[in-house]
Length: 221
Ligand code: GRF
Image (cartoon, rainbow, N blue to C red; front, top):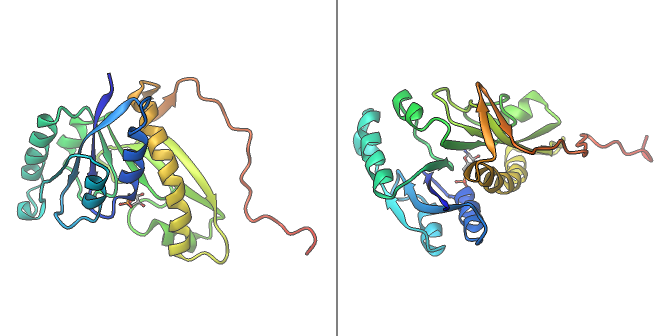
């Protein structure tokens, strides 16, 4: 039986599109039961409809600071669609601790940095200002603390001296679209387990590849 997944979005929905594409494969262990947006104007909604995915808008704005009120409406929608797992994909609304605890181990988020580095706003700018030579993206389980929680999968890219936040974000986005479906596949097929703050993957093996940055031009040296 495929696991029933809700994707929660607030914006353009490119990660959502990557998840929908993967879930369209016959052997994918999850189906996208519903795409939920907390904004009626999210560009991702049109993409979801074009892909034939069921969508629903649960507006968060009318709830103002009443997070619990919004979550009650959201939870009702998740119940209606028999949702077992949640993927946050550019969902710009913080949850209460109660909601997060209710979904602990079943709710994933993706963040465009190699966590625990650069959580929060402007992770690409943070990476550039720190001068790191390698950055990337992280899929993690959601805990009450923002952009933290057991890490399920990461992907890395090199950072060049010529990068702007835009070019770096473009490169990292490609990695995001690759790792989010892979991470969901692992979770939905029961191949991960949580050991305290750490997520372990059954039958995982270390890659023999290195990513070194910058690459030195020997001829120029
Ligand atoms: C992505 O960079 C994701 O990592 C972050 O928000 C952005 C959402 O982009 N959490 P999209 O809506 O999936 O295109």
